[in-house]
Amino acid sequence: MDAAKPSVFVTGGTGYLGRPLISSLLSQGCSVRALVREGSQHKLPPGCTPVIGDALDGKSYGAQIQPAETFVQLVGVSHPSPAKAAEFRKVDFVSACGAIDAAAHAGVRHFIYLSVAHPAPVMKAYVAVRSECEARLVASGMNATILRPWYVLGPGHWWPYAVKPFYWLFSLLPPTRAGSQRLGLVTLAQMTAALADAVAHPSTGVRVVEVPEIRRYRGLKAA
Image (tube, rainbow, N blue to C red; front, side):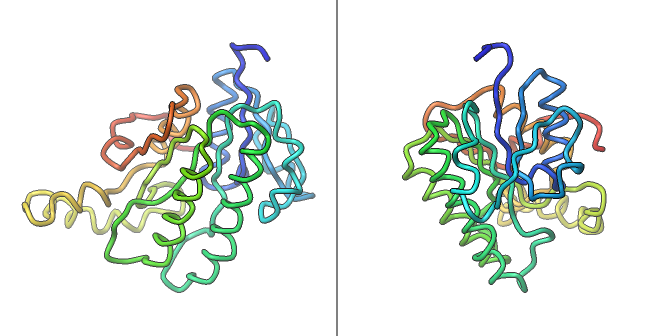
């Protein structure tokens, strides 16, 4: 494989984070293939190669992961809420476990997993599922980068701006300062840049990227 053109396999490539990430990777010279359902190929950015399969069945696409050396797992229930606990188990958990097993079997060198900030006083089912997936990834033995945003601001995801003054207040108070930083808001541009940087700089062992580090990325202009 051409060392100047890293090969990346992405799940969730037609989603909120997937599309801008793929566009960013392609602009940086990466070769990108993305898992999609039949009929959704047109939703991928131009230049990305579609791989037809089922995100809930790693065996449906496992043979098509190679020659990718980096795997990015972005599949998850959209607009998470406490009412979606059963969906987190059926979608987030099943898709992540299948992806981890398939990537390990394919000899992937670096697995990038989009998790969630924790501990947190709310969204307990969501945090529990993502934490279990993190443990499954660590147990796989693959080099991995785990990113833990809390809420990603962007098109259609603006309502948390209304609570930004409270974040500012909590950041000033010693009892709540650490929590406000760990559960802080990040932008779509920052998140995209953090993911792209993880692709460009594979970790050795397991690296965890928390909100304060994600917020250091200036990122590109959100689409």
